[in-house]
Image (cartoon, rainbow, N blue to C red; front, side, top):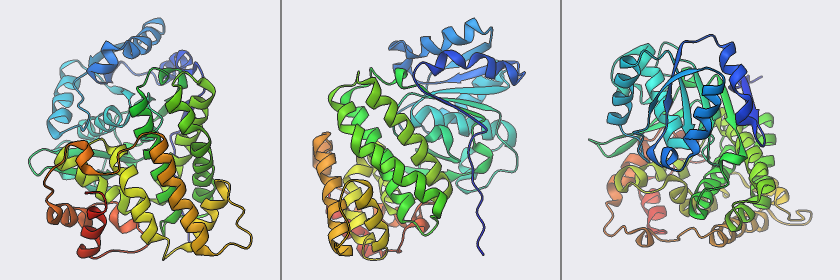
Length: 383
């Protein structure tokens, strides 16, 4: 009989206006001073100010590190560690999407384990638990606030390093849809498709089991019902809130089941060309899953049913085709590009991308392990 370990933050706060309620939870931790990890956009847009007002009201001491880049680098991380030490901080509050969340995790791991962040690439490489993290999410997509995964770009190798580390799990996650209403449609679309990729990959990976299937399928259904609404009208708070629940559920699924070759390949595009992660995932998703459907057709029957197909009497191939075409339709509806040329990418070093994809920490989670030639063929579908 197989056993499973299920990772989830000990406290998860979600729903409209929940940001205003986090003060007492932070006070209960009885820590001294927080390092708020965020980016300059969130500071300029006023989102950071909303968090800082809550902290001020709760008399929480803090310093702000706002140097996080869209694809955070090793330098980002180590500059943050220096800033944390200089300011005498003993825990972190991450504010933002995947980039600030991942940066905070990396800072927290280095603060308690030492060394260089490059040493922690791979699975469960650290010995000590991170500094406590209160992860305040501002995008409906990455689910980084609830996972044991984080991604940092090695700017020397131009590789996105994937860390899967139980010691990086946040203490508290916060998902307030009111922090997401001002997000541009393009960001809403990219992060939403990222969330869909998480849920689909969590369903088809060999690491899936009934608990992860249940949350992933619920996430898929919520995303198909609400993502286009949020892209068309960012102030549709009901749809935003449903997307919050979707990313939470999908995050729990892939956090405990794993991912696959969509992420393995998307990481390389982001690392080499500095492209938006969610967009890369969305472009690759239908083509990788078209191949995966040959190996786990029963999973696509479940997905098809979750997004509205009457599967009785339908063949596995018909169900898989419905899913693939539905993904393409949703991507088009929310404005995802279909070709790398639309993102300004000219010549592509496919050999390098394929080789690095096969080394990525997400690759072993795919239903089948493609050859280098098969990976190259998949990349060529989005050239």
